[in-house]
Length: 139
Image 1 (cartoon, helix red, strand yellow):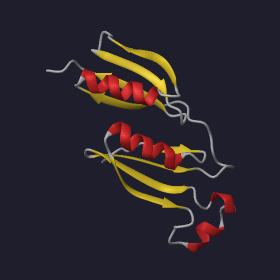
Image 2 (tube, helix red, strand yellow):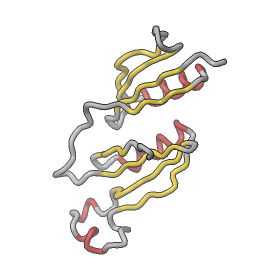
Image 3 (cartoon, rainbow, N blue to C red):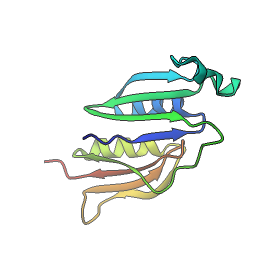
Image 4 (tube, rainbow, N blue to C red):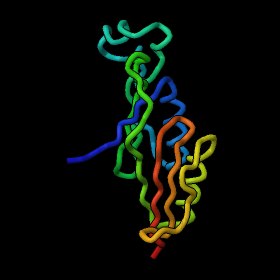
């Protein structure tokens, strides 16, 4: 079994995943718009201005995959009740990722030492996705 976060956006999926690709050092392996769907009715079922929004995207980060899409406007709901958690052993990399994800976002808990981690912080990025960065001290 493998669990993968699947993030839903309101028209910002492409920009978000290009940002995550750079920030997290991953590689976008697939990105399909509604218009590119092999099932032609899919493209016909979305408003014309939505045809170039993302139907599905996959971003590989090591052996982990982060996926997402643009939710149709009538189905979109703001994210709540979860965070995407990143665990690292390199404090410098934890700082870099935290501060990059926080650009134009909201820091909920600054990256700091806790009783369970050398560094831990929480934020909501500019695309509305909540993140937790957890760093054990490097060996």
